[in-house]
Amino acid sequence: MGKQRRLWELRQRGGSGLGKIGAMLYLNIEALTILSALFVRDNKDTERTRLINISSCGGYTIVPTAVTYCAAKFYVSRFTEGLTDPLFPYAGNSLHNQQRM
Image (cartoon, rainbow, N blue to C red; front, top):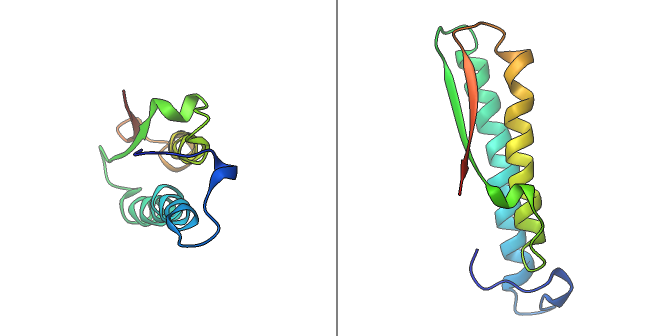
């Protein structure tokens, strides 16, 4: 996570603050959603298919200096868990959300 500041302490100019938040949200939410959807589309009928997304225990807690990170990791967990039943109803297929401790 690196050195984090509280969300309201982000610099207004010169910018690593908002740019870092945008990049993190793109990686953990937008890219993950698009790539997972493509994987499901291409593999939903393949026996013993596995989709493993990496999350973090940070997604199940709030760290005052990493609120955005925690929220993004919660999305990873819930999104992956939400795909399990509707898209992979076959007993041999499953999705996994691997949490890093």
